[in-house]
Length: 266
Ligand SMILES: NC(=O)C1=CN([C@@H]2O[C@H](COP(=O)(O)OP(=O)(O)OC[C@H]3O[C@@H](n4cnc5c(N)ncnc54)[C@H](OP(=O)(O)O)[C@@H]3O)[C@@H](O)[C@H]2O)C=CC1
Ligand SMILES: O=C(O)C1=N[C@H](C(=O)O)C[C@H](O)C1
Image 1: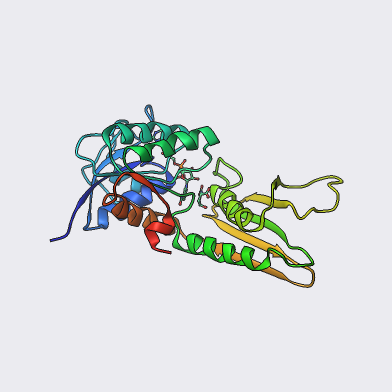
Image 2: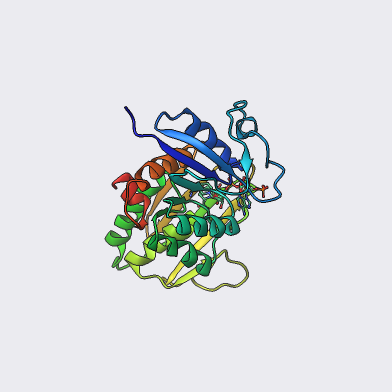
């Protein structure tokens, strides 16, 4: 007999939310009990299976979290993340927080949830991205004191509908590199007579094109050669499967803050 968890998806009618509905509905370890979306959204009151393209599944979109929820996954907006994290803290429901574009104070507010319940927060739920974080840290450590210097630039590509830039993942890659190499200046694009590039910079470049589900390229430019770590998502299921793995992990943990490195045992 499998353990079954009652799962709720916040942002259920969105691009990611719909994939989570389909995949959690198919998963025998998960019992999808709630699909939440923005108050006033046209999706409220509709069967979420219809929205996700799999026909009626008997779960109607609502704007409030019902009783009997074991774990929540949030892919919504910064306001949605704040609201659901407060509910999870009050009701001590484990939370997987995937929304990006939070300000520093919004992020602190979400992280405070981990004092009351278990929280996984990560800008990317993808296995490949989280493994690349480790590879990038390793590269940073190895190249830190290279006599000729190393220029680190991060290029990310996403779909035209994405609202935040650079991506949460690109910012996290920059943080990982800076922890190892010590860069202090985070520069977003360049134009005009920007002058010679100092070693203290990490440059970020955000491309927004078509329906790209997410690519990140971390460039270590040296004198004579370049190392690039390139991660390319093919479908949103790479993030959705990671989020479901995180949900199964987080419901078994005591209150506290967890990363995808913890979830994936990397
Ligand atoms: N960590 C990760 O692995 C990944 C993170 N993301 C992040 O997830 C977030 C969502 O991405 P995506 O699915 O593409 O975006 P969408 O805009 O397609 O979906 C967001 C959904 O959230 C809903 N929403 C808006 N406000 C609230 C609210 N207050 N409460 C509940 N729901 C709300 C929206 O409703 P309405 O349209 O009616 O406003 C919409 O249905 C983004 O921040 C993105 O960067 C995305 C992919 C992977
Ligand atoms: O909005 C997206 O689509 C994605 N957002 C996340 C981010 O900002 O890093 C993760 C993924 O790259 C897709």
